[in-house]
Length: 176
Image (cartoon, rainbow, N blue to C red; front, top):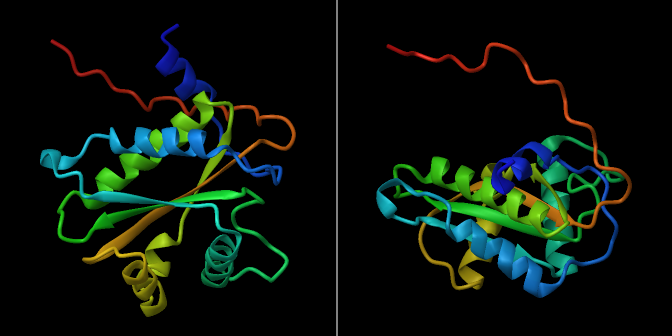
């Protein structure tokens, strides 16, 4: 079987991570894989923040937890030590779609390196807040950005979940 299709079939969303930080080299490879995602008209209007700083990771977790309505004892990133935040330029019409493709690349790249990942939502709500806009400015990021998602990445704690059964009738051929 083709290696890429095999990775697509085997990758799972992971909800238990060890606290062991992936190497900076692996995180750089994963982030770079995101830059190769297709983008509308080649605009490449997506950026990725690679967060390994514990204080910033906790800030993201706390905000995400508040937006999601969970208690203080819940980590919406399931203990993953590294978080990649994907943001799309609000002035690029295809930004949401382009950012979604970046997220897919990040998760597949993590899987290819033996790491687990999961797409966590609520980045949109986070980066609509003034404090997050100020955070981007403090990082030297100019412009208007929309949060697409968080890709939580780390070493898997436990077994990889079995795949859910695929629903039937999701592929329709229209042929001559």
